[in-house]
Image (cartoon, rainbow, N blue to C red; front, side):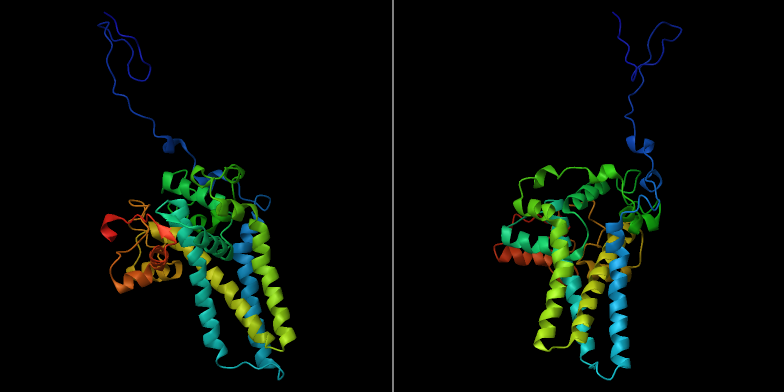
Amino acid sequence: MTRERSGANLSAENKSGRFRVRKFRPMNTTSRMVARSQAIVKSWKTLNWASAFSAFIYPALGLALLITMVALGLALEGLTLHWWYAPIAIGVTALTIFLCNMGIGPLHRIWQHRAGEIKWPAQIIVMLNCILAMQGSLRDWINYHSQHHRFADKPGDPHNPFESKTWAWVGWILFRDEKDLQRPMPMWLKENKIVLWGERFHITLSLIMHFLVPALIYAVVALAGGSLILTALLHACVVIGRAIQFHATVLGVNVYGHLKTPLWIDYLLALLTGGEALHDHHHEHPRSALHLPKKGFWNRVVDYNGTFLLVLRRLGLAKNLEIAPQFT
């Protein structure tokens, strides 16, 4: 009776003429992968200008607008800056951060990790808030995040902070692999008409929301004889609030969410991201609709993206929400 040779499991024949069985060891595919921060070419030719605009250029324009309006208000007698402009500006900035998170939170927890279902009115609200947040194509967002969970903190992770904190923050956004951008819509979203519609008209909707709507507001205020300086200040606060939420998300989730950080940093980033930066248990229970326990007033304040989903469920706009055992 003889044994057939298996290249993976059997060694060469020894002197006694018998085969020695070798235990099969599956290949570690990630060990052969090149780190994304090294594999992707970084140059002016490969720079993704849409991402550069979203991450840096647009926020800089918003900050410049704010500084210009304050300077003009202080320098010109015809323009008046009232003290109550400040609390309104702070409120608009906070509201913008909140609305952006009302897009990114459900996108991440529902559309990405399938922690439940939301009905079409809520889907429209989420899709529009994602456009406000300016984090790019829904398809690309979900595909990149799927890769992140597949290769978390290993070669192949699109934003591994152990390769480079700067790369995990914005490098992977500014320099993209064309193959990443050619991936199709994930299978579980191919029948979602709202997601597909938002993806199809992503650029058009972005131009309308971020340029046409502000222009119309300026026109209405001017025709009504309102304060253009206040309008410009609030416009700048919307742009800046969006930028704060954007960078808090990529820093809180991609960088600090995978590193040991002081508790106060975790909770500050959680407040700016609606709880998305609370990352301790996320990779163990990615399908959880909550990132903090359901009970507790401050838990629901800090993890307000999860609270939003609970409110949608109470309104009949969400169902089948899955919650990690430690958060029930």
